[in-house]
Length: 322
Image (cartoon, rainbow, N blue to C red; front, side, top):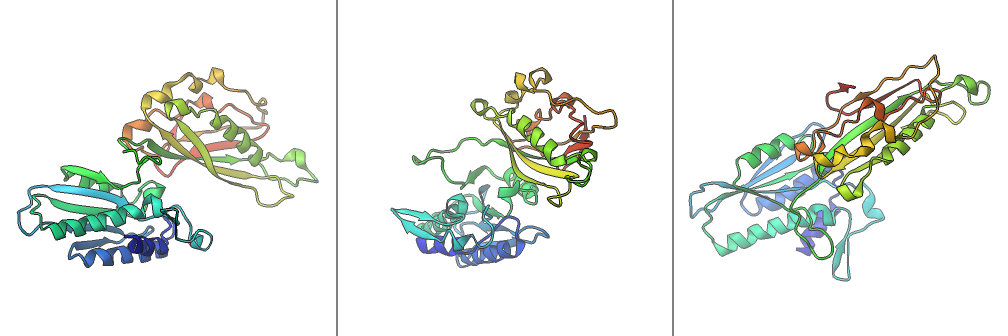
């Protein structure tokens, strides 16, 4: 098992890099073909290909389906192995994607070996579904996962257990993603700073405000995990952008008083020449109900027009004007 885990980990498979992800997909697929399982490689245009593997006992007619679900993509970019090599130390395996979740793929592979060796007459068909984009929201695999789940009597997710005691996970948070885009006005930082409107400064203020929405006790977290803006050091930034990670356990957790504008800090007053527009949409959550109430009211983003000419919050899905 350790040799197989090493083989999978050495095949780097970042979610956002299709060529290396596809190479890893091919390596995983080849191991399943050796087990005489039916392997379907499902091509994707922008992400790594998905794998659907089917196995049924030859001794009994299948009367249902069990789904074993997992993913082979990782959060680590190509080249991470150079600074985080695969190794065994103190009875533990280390390396990019070892824990989440290539070890789970290895467990499934050897579980099938055990079933085949036992010659058990299973009454259900087993479908193993390995996807390539779980770490970035399962955009290309969601419909596939939902379709297989609807046809299954039970679903076993081989994500890693929780904590050093190996606790069983019985639920997951809803996950969403939002994007804040701030538009300002460019100007020379030395010759005419008074004519500029710094989008980076305004974005920093809004990120500080977003931080107040966190409520760890209720399982609500909002994090700005990607930020960019500006063009040159001597030019006041005309545009800035942040991508937010949104997570919540229950919809009810998002009705707390912190969403009320009266509890919000106030920024500087608006200038007469400025205009302020917010467009907001949120990704469908997993489970779908978990984030349906997270869209903040218009008042959640107070005007601060001496800093920003306009601002937008958007995600890849449909926009909703507030």
